[in-house]
Image (cartoon, rainbow, N blue to C red; front, side, top):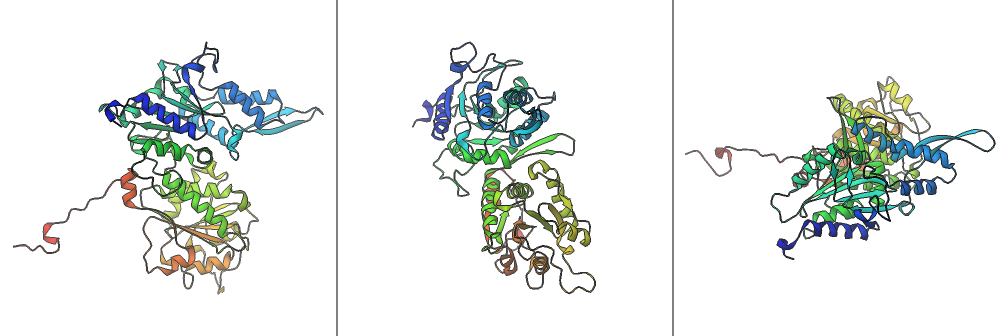
Length: 489
């Protein structure tokens, strides 16, 4: 194929074909514009396809009266805040958790129900649509290249540039998105992912992300990278927007964090985080079964690649897994400052965890928190798992199998089974499962770590992080006199 003959419309057409392959219905924006026979909006300012939304809600919530369904739709279509990011955060919570409505039954009693906007478990129960050249008129008239709708809600925007135009780059597409956010901001009230591409490079990012946090998606099915010959945009679309994966992504891999300056940052997972968590959840479910070996494995993601957030994504996913039956998570570090830092990350992700994590104040407090019948996210330093007074062994606190020990920097010697704290933890929680997260590789001679946690289940090393732009390369300048074989004359 001659690159000189490729136009932006060709890239757009290819993207639509890939989406069609994934099962999306593809429509041309002008064909469903207002004042056309097949119009799906009454005016260009509308960014949701209300008929599709109304039909899906009726399908997913048949037991709820129509007026209560209409009230739920009203809450989505009319956000309360004048600020875009706050409205986006509110919408995300509605998308994931639904909206509670009250209605009067035939016997006169009042009942409350949660209205679902998406069926996260059964993709075919949702309405999947890709629309190109979707015109929106708000502060000005703008036309994003492709908008992806689920149940009439515009959840993703794809902005494309001409691969043969040297001036039209991924950065140009990013700047175009910033213009859209200013001039047709209502569209982004509902946005969960933004894709920018020049036909050669493709990046995915969040509503609040700067250019450095728009990252590639390197794989389709799993952690193995796609062959270099495959186009980045094709890999990203097929990898991130396949129906099962995208629904999982929406539910478990998006968080909002308040920054030191008081602004809200929306953070979405990179491909390495998404697939690491998926693998870790699978191994945890298997390890926690009666026949399981209680070793979930080790996730090695290099420093600076979002390891703490990966741990939070994992915690949120495992908490909601139906086979775990409301598990208790115990997050362990070996230093107070690390405990504080990691606890801070999890505390900012309460919506993802569906509960408020607790930091154990002392050994007594830790023992109280671990005697619960189910549930809970408890942070502790490993030193609190130590016998007190006349005790020769740490007392058993629970024999439940749905307890997961999440160790930060799992390779350190304190986690040894023979003379380390892993022995005391096992005395306290004999049927718990262990998973480790680390930013540095485990030494080959470190048998204790493998005995406690098992082997690697996900590796994302410094070279991969640098290649993806997730972290910056580190250079070390060595004086020539220190290079082997060279001597000062």
